[in-house]
Image (cartoon, rainbow, N blue to C red; front, side, top):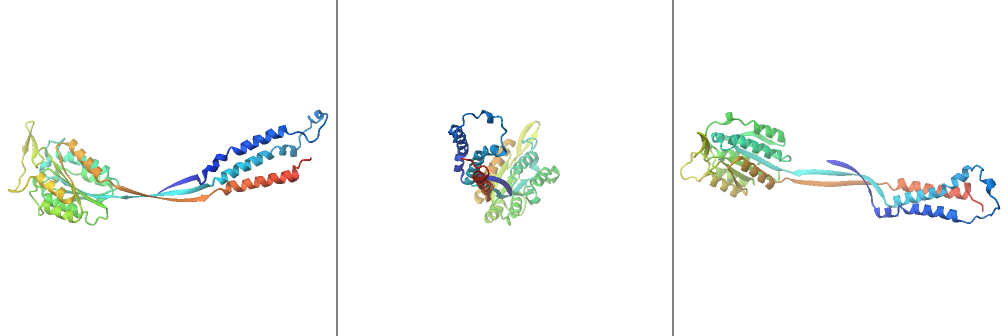
Length: 338
């Protein structure tokens, strides 16, 4: 909640009249000089050196008093107000489960320096742009595990991603279905308006207890959109390795009759209302995360509460006091004859 002190005029058009008191004062001074004397003397030079009395000096202040009273009156008519404006900002965040492949094929070097490090860098960059959301991180290889439970602490989420090391990689197995199902389970109790899973893998599903499309059915039931990203040169789950300075694609193990990984990921995205992306290099991977970041914008709700107090009396009362004081002075103390 933010608070701001504000001063304003409710009827500012009255301020157009601000020059009028000064115009009136100049007219009074001009008319005073042009006014014909009430009593004519043959010679007033003998009075020139006489000291002026206090009453005489105060007499010249009377037009200034009325002019100042008019000026304060104009400001009072403009209805000055002072108050506080409170801004209550709340974000309708997006709950995001990042489901990341850490199988052995992620050590391939077709990305700089390898797929794993490129994935970590892109994921951290994405997290830094989601400061109003809740993020959980699930990793999978032969099996799936929760690396970071749902959190609003983006700094902590970044540290968990950066902590992913080669030691976490057991073998070439890839349990995509288990990873996605576990990631979706972290969103089932989410109160967020939008729930999203970002699934990244470079291989075929060849391990685990839950098939990818079964996990997609779970996501669809829980209204979780899945953005599926395939990573690698061929887009079909092949593993690219460097041998003798040359890149070679080694197909991943795939059960007979199963569709390529890209087809499976496309179907997952279609079933859940998400999108499918293919990243052939680290630049494309960063662009994909940027695109997802644009697609899943966090809505910000802002309410404005204003509480103003009238301040016109701070100008109106002094103006009345000056007018009364001028009237009394003219009528009694500084009364002129004739």
